[in-house]
Amino acid sequence: MLERARSLDAADPLAQFRERFDVPEGVVYLDGNSLGCLPRATPARLEQVVREEWGRNLIRSWNSADWIHLPQRVGGKIAPLIGAQPHEVIACDSVSVNLYKLISAALAMRPGRKVVLSEPGNFPTDVYMIEGLEKQGLAERRLVERDQLLEALDEDVALLLLTHAHYKTGELFNMEALTRAAHEKGALVLWDLSHSGGALPVHLADCKADFAVGCGYKYLNGGPGAPAYAFVATEHHIADNVEDSALRQPLSGWMGHARPFAFSDDYTPAAGVDSLLCGTPGILGLVALEVGVDLIAEIGIERLYAKSQKLSEFFRQCLAENGVEMELVSPSNPAERGSQLSFRHEEAYAICQALIARGVIGDFRDPDILRFGFAPAYLRFEDMAEAARHLAEVLDSGEWQRAEFQERAAVT
Ligand SMILES: *Cc1c(COP(=O)(O)O)cnc(C)c1O
Image (cartoon, rainbow, N blue to C red; front, top):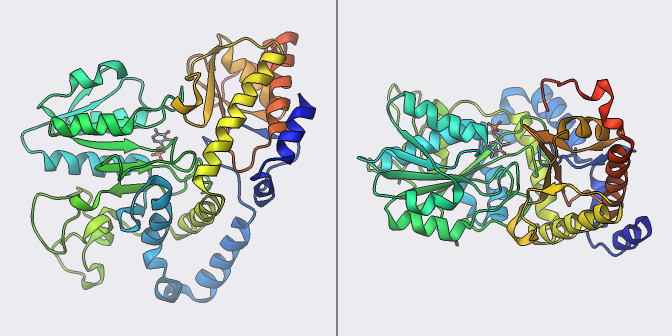
């Protein structure tokens, strides 16, 4: 397998990009879907911003280094990766906070409707944010299994909120069909792209999506806790100073004001996605995210997705050749899943820990899922062969049974 893997690597048009990341020696990193690798350019760029822009130029850098437009600039670079126009995307806050803003805005745009429809087992923060709005009396949470979503879409639904690629299984929703079905019932649609943005091409405009949010620290390699991003389709932007039923988000902070430096007592939302800003953006986080986004854009999202599918299929072949039989919970057809493969095993947690001890880093998702993410920007086919070999050895030897692999850490 290793031979085969090496010849696939030799023929891989993206192989050169691994060098642009600081992938630690001896590590097979299959967790780029939780925290992307460090781009080699990031430390120097951060150092320059810290020492020069902050250290030397101080407050002047808001203008001279254009810090003030960094959320828009980074959002604009994310836009083509998700099928949006640059002025429709802004980088700010966390996914959770952006969900709150956009769910609230959607509810306000559908007076008389309160239901936010989603699926049970969606990423926790998505369903928690709906629950929070329900406790405020603003929303009604409706969770139905994914195959019953169409029936559950009725005239009470204000918003359909779904995660495009499921975080546990990687299963993809048909964005176009579900968006259309929701619109037919007069509902709006908000897509969480945390596991698809930067991993596979997303076509928000073609699918006529209303809103989207996504994550900066996963496939965009923005660093731990990197700012997230939010998308609002142009048709929902408010024109400057016009009071109408369009986009109104509830966190009316000064940075989302039309003229923050007028220091007025009254809030006038900025036009378009600028009104999604709340407080002062974290410049260091945005700077690091920009490096990651630039790199993904340079490699090209279509090429990345093509390689990700080849990697995951090759990984499955390697598992089969190593005699590993585990229940696949991801769709078997690569076109129906994101950039990951998840397997069910009673001892998934301990197996995951034993693999990590060998330098093969995947992750565990409660209660019994072993998840491997394939960030195609820096992974090699050789890594697939190595990971499969280690997994076979861990299972065959029973090494996972060691006491040290049973203890649960705070972050799994
Ligand atoms: C990772 C992830 C998030 C992260 O939310 P934060 O508020 O940025 O921590 C949200 N939704 C999904 C589907 C995710 O996978």
